[in-house]
Image (cartoon, rainbow, N blue to C red):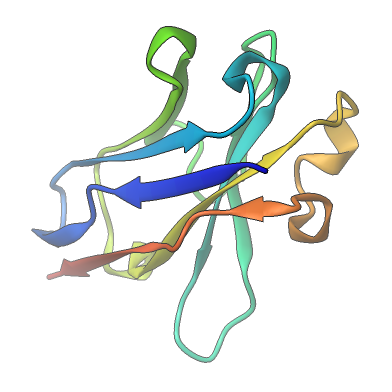
Length: 125
């Protein structure tokens, strides 16, 4: 069984930065592709970014150029570096893990069987 623990959220002024982290345990981290999703109040869960087992990265148009996803296999951790934050980035951010190698699955929350508990990011203007 895979366990994921998210951290790093907080309150930040618009234009600022935050780095989220998600630590995986229970299975070999290098076997999994990881994704970050977010959900704002009253909205559906939204894809943010993903990184494959080989390090290929994928981003939503909303965050491309501002957010960077990375992974440290030695630490079993995936990161989401968020810069130039906007109030509309406010949401609960969660990481997910999946074993699929098909990139089309990275964008779909229902393809991730394992999830972290989420961390709140609030951006104020």
